[in-house]
Amino acid sequence: MRPHIRISAAVLVLLGVPACNGVLDLTPTDQLSDAAVFADPKLTQAFLNDMYRGMGHGLYEIMLASVSDETHFIHDYHTSEIVTSIITSSYRAALDDPRFSHFNWSSNFSRIRQTNIFLSHIDATTFDAAWKQRMKGEAYFLRAYFYHNLMRMYGGVPLITKVYGLNEDYKVARNSFKETVDFIVANADSAAALLPTSYTGADVGRATKGAALALKARVLLYAASDLYNVNPSANALTGYTTPQDRTALWRAAKNAAQAVMDLGSYGLFRPTPASSQEAAQNYADLFLQKTSQEAIMSRFFLTTRDDGAYPNRDDGPNGYHTWGGNTPIQNLVDDYRMADGSKFDWNNPAHAAAPYQNRDPRFYGSILHDGAPWRARPTDVKNLDPAGTIQTFRQLKLSDGSVVAGLDTRDSPVENWNGAYSGYYLRKFIDPSLNAQFTRQEVPWIFFRYAEVLLNYAEASIELNELGDAVNVLNQIRLRAGMPPFSAGLGQAALRDEYRNERRVEMVFEEQRFFDVRRWMIAPAVLSKVAGGINIFVEGTSSTDRSTWKNYRYVIDTIQARAWDNKLYFMPIHINEMNRNGLLTQNPGY
Image 1: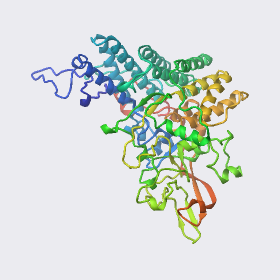
Image 2: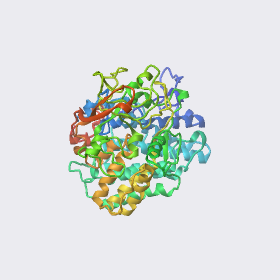
Image 3: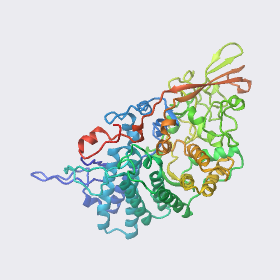
Image 4: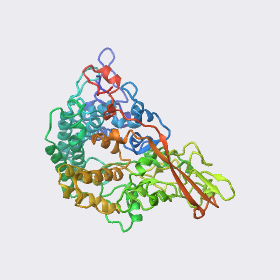
């Protein structure tokens, strides 16, 4: 396996390339030596800053939600091969798309090499001692973060701390899953010991003590989960091969989450809404804030530097001249509870007659459904929908006998090629104040937030049968969501089921579900189901006045066949990496 090198002239860094020796010994004009970088505090800072870009974010055109049971990516881009479980080590489909690079082998090891270079030089610098220690903590955090993404995708991976030269061919075997977890936790601990609890000004967005502890809590929660402990196909690379003290694992996860809570630096965004409508708006607004008490660490964008995400363009309804993109599926919609906490049921006549009424407020803050209020239509469409509400009905039969389709469908008179198949669009992450199709958003992507920490604490508490602790923190989230509290009388199994659904809707589209269904080992049940959608038929006298519409009929439809293979518990290492390094062992099934 040869080292992966990333040279960034834009930030004037070099990842350790030696000078040429011979008749000609030229110094590259677009590169700097390690010595030059670590002699200049500004260049050292630029080198560190560049590493953060390796964390990626979740607001790319393809979202991880579309290879889970959350959304369907209407443009495909080779996502269908993942959800039908036909990927191989030589054909990894959308996994090799650059938009998923923050989960991929080569890009993460390239960034890990940067952290190793940094850590091998920083102690010898003569910079301000406190500043140097803080940067060192950031590098430890980043190394832990890159390794945690590799662990989540592949299991145990090679643990590399040495800086290999460009011409130095090397082969490194994968470390065990346990060794990988221990390494990440050790790096997170090292980071937490060196990092401040908060920043001000231009430093906001850097790793903090809270971010390092939240990362540790997440990794320890994974380590305690079923996939790594009771998977009959596990080997030392994909789990624990000797029986572990599960109680100790869950206790470590709970204590790690408690450590974040004990900092006293974070809380839920607007925790006490006065109404269901306000709760929905609160939830939607959380993801449009530059900063909040809930965000532990975020990736910020600056549109003034041609930087930013396009969820408004990539995922907006086609009747607004936007691209549809990652469209929620019926499987997810049906898992949102009713406002009274009961399960939604198509066999309940009241539910089936009005499926979008009286639901969990987070449904309205996350998903655009037929009839949902949205922003004003573009000028050339406004006369077709003066009110600015989502139209995903399949057919509106008018009193004159004519039939029209909704503006946000694949039969739309506005644009039909970007319409959702499912009948739903994303609401979460999208700033409705941005009317221009190609305006970048500055709203950040949140890597860690306090609600996840509470959920992690609750999960560990449930598995430890400390149900009172679990209910206490879950009800903090429920209160913010405008949902009734869970009862302390729920048994362990019932509370576990409620918790998993609570995590599903609270963390929806945040790159959690893809991993949760695997570590809980429920993927065979939920990822083998077809992706569903809705066909809506309605009658009315006016195509622009919803008050005249009646006799709604809702018909569930299949929009995408899906299948599950147990090999998909872990992703395949690309065949090119296997060929470079004969010591690598491929994951089971590939």
